[in-house]
Length: 491
Image 1 (spheres, one colour):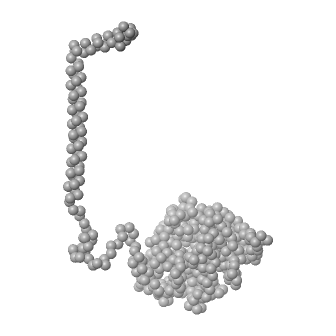
Image 2 (tube, rainbow, N blue to C red):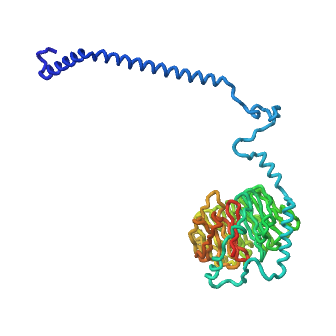
Image 3 (cartoon, rainbow, N blue to C red):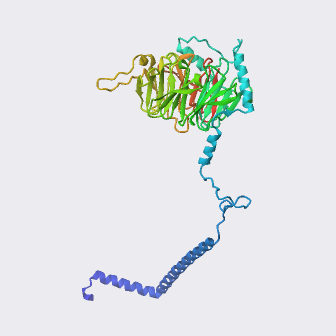
């Protein structure tokens, strides 16, 4: 660029640069700048060398570690604890889960056929027989208040009686089984509270709550190796208890024989067993949707098998006043009413939104209630349904009957709690009890018109009571939770 062509502003800028450089030379700052640059370059080189050395050191350490042989246990080396070589057919159990096919097969073999009772169990059953014999004699007083067979005309009086019920910490709570309770029943003894339960792994327990001695009041055994779904006291002989389980077996505990006698077995899981007094038989609900009839007079020989549902039957219930009518509740979302005299098709097939936990007739046969996973309790007019079978319309469709009433009730117990089931009160046929998910924990009593009569709460009950039973003759309620505990509500 020619100097004459540079503007005045550029000339002034260049002059300033020249003057600044001369001042730097006079101060000696240029040499300092060069030294600082050299030091920074040497620092970068040293840092890079250190990084390379560290990487090489780590690689060398890894190589040295890999060269050391790994420690192995004697089991992994094929030796036992004494260092002796194991046999060639030795198999190691899996680290996750303690059950293998071999173990399960051994357990199944060990709990087949009749199951003997130990000496402690025999002593308990002997004392129980003596108490049942004494009950036949008149007594001046009983440990609980007994009400007459007359039903209260005013439902409020019944609610007042229930309001007196509570659970005693010392005598009213007992852990009977180690696992979740699936089945429960109460003896019809007029003066004793005797409870039988079954749990998830086949354990059975019998508790005489009237006895003061805790050790003498409980009898336990394991007649099944899978979930014990049903326990049922014999209505004809209070010394006998029936048990049914997912292992496909029904056993009968006889206090006279002191043994669990196997009376029926099959390859399907059993979910419910009820007595059909009119036909002297047992009705068995199975997982494959079949209902089996066992004749009591022929050593419980199967006399009928009906395929009633596409999926498992959760419960079966017999109408008390007309025992040729029965109802079934199934996983296929249908509650069906059947006539034992003609089982080709149901009288009514009542669809629900989700799986039905239970269907149950009231003690007087006037109502039929269902517990459904759609969070509703429904009550049907039972005599009307039985007297008016479903009739197909011209289009071929059958219009299902509507319930007499229904009430919202949270039945979502989840996978860790036993499903809710209700129980009617034989002393008050228009009242039923069921567990509750509400906080604080409680049990609820409803009328046949779906009105909530009572919520029973107590400090001794702090868990969900999935199963609840009224005592047949005493004002007592028995409830059970999913940790194996049973609570007795009395006054």
